[in-house]
Length: 331
Image (tube, rainbow, N blue to C red; front, top):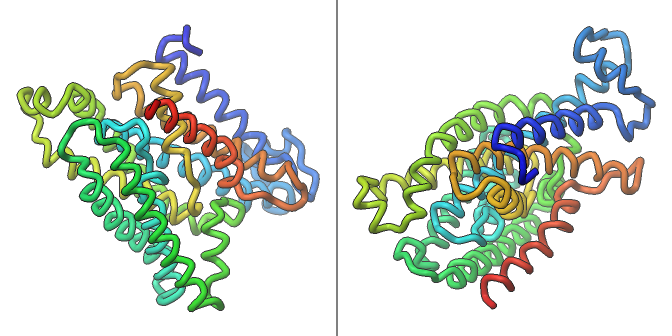
């Protein structure tokens, strides 16, 4: 992959994504479905064919949501790493996931009548509060190399939010069944009703994220250099923070607390394409989508016909990678 040009890398990863998405439509199904039936369901759907109904009503929204969630979380992580110039930054490490979880748990238990849009807004608000607290406590805007302080602030805020989320679940146990599934991080229950509020937010967030790539390149030169080149640091930080919150809030409200995508994928993309965020962000989106779709397929295969949450599969990969990153940056 390293020898391929940027366009070739995108094409190769897009092909892998299409292959995994196609496999996701028909593999590990209680009712046997063939690959040919999966293709025919997309090209010439028959509403009287049970295999077609399963693919179109259950599997297709599931794979679309998995891919979109992966792209959103990966791009959000890449923006956070570029904005803070911290290789350990990601939504899960810096507390955004935990804050979004707390916001969604609060709305789901206290005001479930608000529905999907209410939980999406609550996830964004919760993530915004924790993101702001971590940035303040970690002194991220002062420059320098205080990466450890930023990560410690993220871990502390995440632990606090996790404790409050558990308390909310205990207080409202009857309404918390969906929250427990959401905290595991899974797209097993994804339906078209979940896709409808997800795609507009994801489309806006990803499109805007690709436009900030040149600005992130300037930020990587250092605050003084960026300022001398005309970059308005305060405005850029606000725009990037809003984009991160939109992407993470949309993804987490649809699939739950899937961690480590925003940490793992940007590092792989950076290793493949270099430090240019104009290339990193699109490549990261494709890789993130591919990772989550693949994890969803694997989650069905491990203990079929039962399912393992896709978030657990990704955590098995992401947790050792995070430990390796911490050791390499502190040694």
